[in-house]
Image (cartoon, rainbow, N blue to C red; front, top):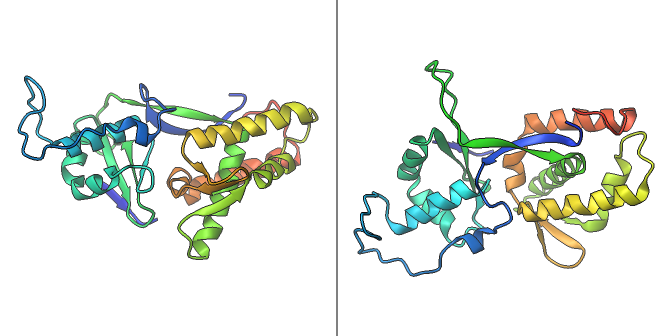
Length: 240
């Protein structure tokens, strides 16, 4: 367990569970049946060792890229309280639990077999973000960093600011404004679906602290270099 404080159009990749339902929100994925703390088993033949809340937390961790205190409907508290046993269950699947206590974000990641020289089977696969989505992730990460510098827990951004950023950072040969506008809208929608953006009104969004987990400083710097190269002279069909 780790606790921290801090192709054509497919450019940035992060890991997610192959069979996860990415369009299902955390609130929708959590059963609201009351928890019976006195229960020993929850179904016929139950041989599990976790209580109901811990099992739900484990399932949510497996189904989603990350869990935040804001969207978890109480799961975050269970993860923090039972992190040792939940991490143990993840370890059985060659995964580990990572908790950012400052930003209140938890996620799973594949363990590295390098130290033991072993070859582990994997449950996670690389999810590739599209070109506009990748550029927008960079913009949101920078906005969130500015917000953290002001002591704010969440960053805020307008739809217009996101569209303007994507327009100003198109590839050098991009000339189809209609198509680019459609791609920009899809990019915003994709980040909403991923719960990195939460719409607070028609034109304003709150940026999830999970953006800092998804794009640590080293990754951000690499993507900023890529974005600069795109604006200076890369063709629209270039890959990273």
